Length: 358
Image 1 (cartoon, one colour):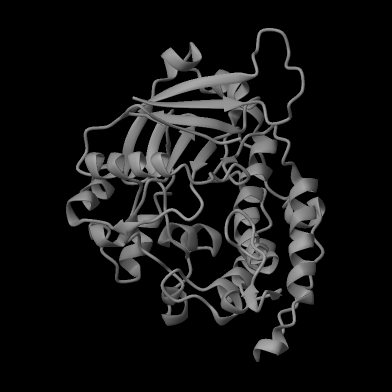
Image 2: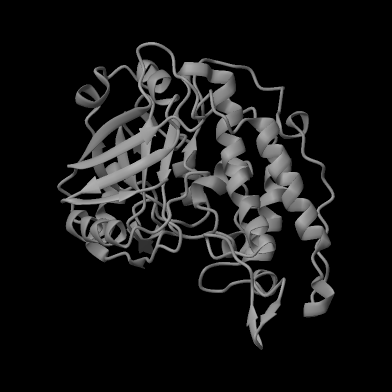
């Protein structure tokens, strides 16, 4: 089993009946990808690479990373990007014009029906799509990085003993490169938080466990069968392979852009999962099918085969959190309330290998 220990990120005295730490365990599922994924998990734990605890717990209604906090981060990213000397790298300057506030990013016209996702969508997608477009233009993909992100990684320049250095953070990003990447990360975190705040303990939350500078490998054909078997279904405590590449999925295009007619430009921005890594996601909420019924005929209308496993239409299950043993309940509302107090990964242990993240 895989053991995950969380801690209270605020380091304040917790209420009676709660401790500073919370532990849960994961049982890997017997699927074609099992041994390959566990091998990569062992490797990443041995390396003890930094884990991303900032953009990790999405959709929890009570969090220290609230909307004002996230808007402040976006406005700081805007400042860094707008002030960057793009002309020095023979690039057209990027200017983000929006000032981000909770009022701007929330759509108050939606009516709450009691669940998150589907009809309950309080996100201002016009703003989010603009953010994602900024990100896609400046970041590119892993295979084809944009000249903007390449330039951002080469500034500021510091010369020490005749050697050029570029000051970088733990993620190996310069301030501007991190600002570009945070446009995408904060966008997704905001989308989850906005709907979660409306839904309260009816929310559907996700933990994304990702390591900085983690390697990835081509997704083998046999692994892809899981897409057709599971589709977009997620169960309470279900563990799924993380989508470790940049770009929008077909389902995201369908949801965010109102089921558009797919043209060449739209298709170029769509990615199908081609890689796997040690990274994984955990579903905290009731069982849910993330794909609307209208999604499947929309694919066929656009000349796509819903049974083509190379379109990566779904989630790959790889594990299951032992809910009753870990939380003393399988009630998703109770689990959400308990786990919401511990939104920081302290350590992960598997097969005698333990990595601590403090």
